[in-house]
Amino acid sequence: MTNQTAERQSSGTEVAGRVADVLLLFAGGPQYLGVSAISRELGISKAVVHRILQSLVSREMLEADPGGYRLGPAAVALGVSALRRFNVRNAAAPVLRRLRDETGETTTLSGLVADERVYLDQFESPHEVKMTVEVGRRFPLHAGSSGKVILAFLPEERREALLARPLAALTPGTVTDVAALRAQLAETARDGVGVSLGERQADAGSVAAPLFGPDGEVHGSISVCGPRHRFTPEAVDRYRALVRDAAEEITRTWTTHR
Image 1 (tube, rainbow, N blue to C red):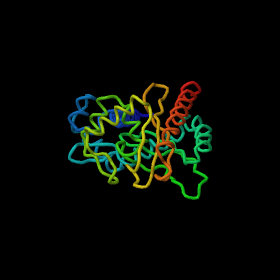
Image 2 (image 1 turned 120 degrees about the vertical axis):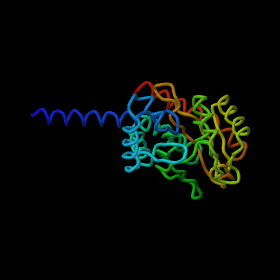
Image 3 (image 1 turned 45 degrees about the vertical axis):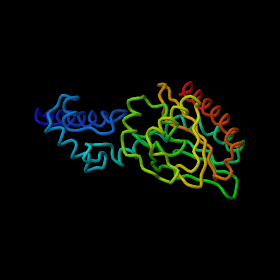
Image 4 (image 1 turned 30 degrees about the vertical axis):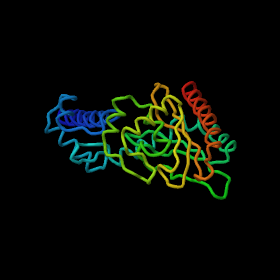
């Protein structure tokens, strides 16, 4: 190997390392990052950061808008692919199947990907009229019980950063008032369970509980969901205990058999 070849390989490795370092800054960090912040954090020039960012944007790993740069659809797709391989799916499957049989309603598994929630798995209700979800589709955390239970247990700084963003109304029942949403999240954090009646889908009801990973952080949620008319106060009260217990069982299995 010539010195020139070795130098090119060394340079390529260094560039790849810098690209990886830039992407890792977005993992669990602020939703948006700018050139100056990345340059300061990694100790590399703004010109180099700008070139890396443009390359990542061209591959949809990042997106650029007036707020700065954020993870793009390609990065989210990679995250979903990784989450699908997490042991949590193995831990959740038998529990969610049993929960589906106990409630007669569809049960779901969601994962936290960047600042959104993605359905990872579902076990469909045997009812002819039932709710089904689109596995792999992204949703905001503020709308629906599966997202709200994740949002309620995020670190305060990250939660407040998300609440500072515009909150889209997916249905007339979506809570977009920040004060009202904070009150709901506080109640969810105390109870360990979230309830939604028409917040993400107008005719749907759901009860959800958070899932915590081996690191003790919230990484997802499970839910029981179905047509809103079947989610009576009596049914919701019954599902609260069942979903909470199921989530605790999945978390326990996941963290002890990873």
